[in-house]
Length: 180
Image 1 (cartoon, rainbow, N blue to C red):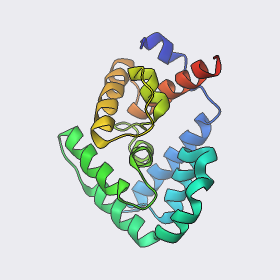
Image 2: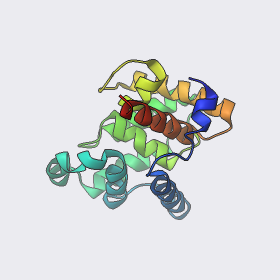
Image 3: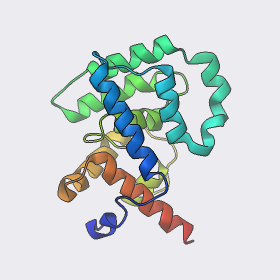
Image 4: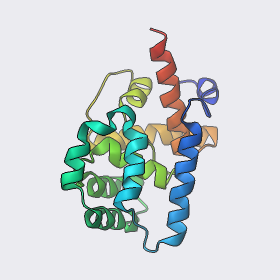
């Protein structure tokens, strides 16, 4: 992917302001909560952002199985884990977050991307298709490591956060797919 193309999509899309506001909200929580954790209500905001029109599809399952105490514990453990090996940190954190009922690898990656946008991105079919040229709907932790590494390389060359770079890739793919 050409960097000039990504530059055009940095603040593209109708959810740019919503994403910015959600990242600011979560950054504020990080300043107030030590150790850092998310509540069920915080997670719900992230789920609405990530799942968009798909949010209601698993709402009953989440209401029945996802408890505030589990969210607090899993997110506290995930974000307390620090490792100089970025992939090891990603694997640990993603595994802890994806163990929450109704949270898979893409949602876990969204949590990471919104809480730590300098380091993480959201793995989903749009980004994967734009970067690797293949359709994929299910992702493993190694897939996420591979995707994050590629996006982080672009981010470094652009001087952007990993999340901003991923958002540009997502917007690029969305616009490109609407043309067909």
